[in-house]
Every structure is written in C-alpha cells, then in structure tokens.
Image (cartoon, rainbow, N blue to C red; front, top):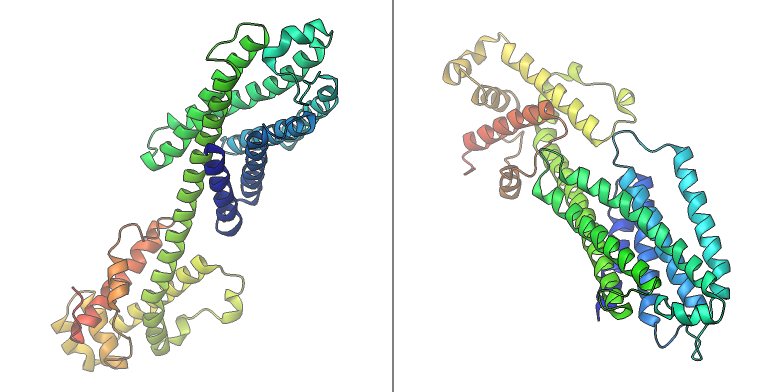
Length: 373
C-alpha cells in the first residue's frame, strides 16, 4: 500500500514539475530526474518479491543513486556561491564509477535457489562460499553513495532551516527532507551493522519499512516545496494580470489626452509583462500629472471641489474624457485587489504606483455611483 501511495505522489510530482513549475531549468530537470528515479526505485522495491534477482536489484540501486545525485545537486544550487561546473562533473563521474562498480559486482554475488541475491544478513553464507568480497563491495558502494548524499542534504537542509526570517511555509518542506536525511543515516548505520553480523532495528524487514518511510519523507518535502513554488508563481501571474486590469483602461484614456508621453511601440519590443506594466504605469502617471497641471480656467471648479488625489485626478479625467471613458471596476477585480497575497512584491515602487492608480479607479467608480465597498 505504501508503495502505491508513493508511486501516486511521484506521478503527481512529475506532472506538476513538467507542466506548471517555471523555475530555473536546471532545477526543474533535477526535480524531474529525482521524481522519475524515485518512481523507478519504488516500483522495483514493490516487485521484491515475487520478481527478484540481480537485474531488479541493480536497477533499483542505480535509480536510488540517480535520485541521490539529483537531490544533492538540487540542494547545492541553493548555496550562496553556486557549485562550479567542474565540481558538478566530478560528482557525475564519481556516481558513474559507483554505478559501473555495482553493475559489475552484482553478478558475482551468490543467489538463493529462488533466484534472489544474497542480502546483508546472508554475509556468513557468502563467507562460506568465498564470495563475501563481492557482497561487501556491492553494499559498500551503495552505502557510501547513500552516506555522501545524506550528508549533503542534511547539512543543506539544516542551514536553510536555521536561516533567519524564513517563513514557516518555507521551513516545513525542508524539515520533511531533513527528516528523510536523518532516516537515511539510520538506514546506513543499520545496514553496516547488519553487514558485519550485528543486526539492529529488527533487521532487513524493519529496514525496508524505514527506507519506504525515508522515501515518503523526501516525496512529501519535494511535493510541498514544488507546490509552494507553483502557488507563488500563480499568485505572481494573477497579481500581474490584476494590475494590468487596473492600469490599462486608465492608461488608454489618459494617454489619448496626452499621447506624447507614450513610448513608441518599436521601443517596447522585447518587454516582458512586468516591464510593460511598469512602462504603462509611468506613462499613466505622466499623463495624469499633465492633466492636473493644466491651467485651463474651465478646470478650476474641479480643483476647488477635489483639492487632492485620488479624487482630483478622477474628477479631471471624467470631465475631460466623459463619465464612461474609464469603465468601473468589477466586483471580482475589487475583491481580488483587497487580497494582500495578490501584491506585486518584486517591485515595491511599482506596487505603490499601481495602488495609487487603483485608488483613482475606485474614486471614479464612486463618482459614477457604483458601490465599491
């Protein structure tokens, strides 16, 4: 049952990472490899028994090795100083030698009558057959890679969790991965003691359940981290779209009155959504400033009636362009605008500028008799 749950979570993670996650491509690829490798390892673990043998065990261990390398590199991408390409290549080379060593050694390990290879608990029987060297070397390579990856993950997670000003939502996924690293350390210690004839924690059966628990913790941590990141990206996109809905109608009306403030379209080529929003906001504020500074005597009554913004700008735009030139804010837009999570947090200056335009839109809606409460 546990394997089925883990496989389901893995498939969901792969879909989320492939379809929704828009982070750095290197991290995305590492997440994909991790998810796929853990998926293969879990399926192989679920196949033992009834299907067993050197090939299945080797595939499982290589999949675990791939997941270990990917997780370790993923953790290292969050260092203040990014890991060098040379160090990355060295990690790949070492992992390749470990995989090659396991691929050679697995065929020297004795097998039982049912075709299953000797486990760590069978070390005495392997000694009797003169093939203990293969069993010890095979498990040494497996556990050494496990230990190295565990150390990298544990240290990286601990540093992340102990950083100041980290929100709970950021610490929690890391805490699950850290718990998985601690479980991995327990698994390594138990395996070594078992290999040398001192079984602890109930031996192989308990260690199998421990490994499933470790993989589960890693899955939960990765899932929470990916979902958290995806939720951030969704909020950022929604906040950007909401800001465009606030700014564009006002920009269109005000820059029609003062078209000189507009940047030529050819100069805006290559702008992303955030840069475009920033430029539209600047142009809108420039046009509003020119409108407020207009010394037309016909506008004096409006200055007297509304001496300050946002009502001054709202009244002037309505007077010059018509009451319906700028449409009233919809209830859905108003509701979303009041959510603190839908703010442009990347650029506080831009966020404040958009907020001032939003207040002008609210004032215009109120002047048009629309309930904006």
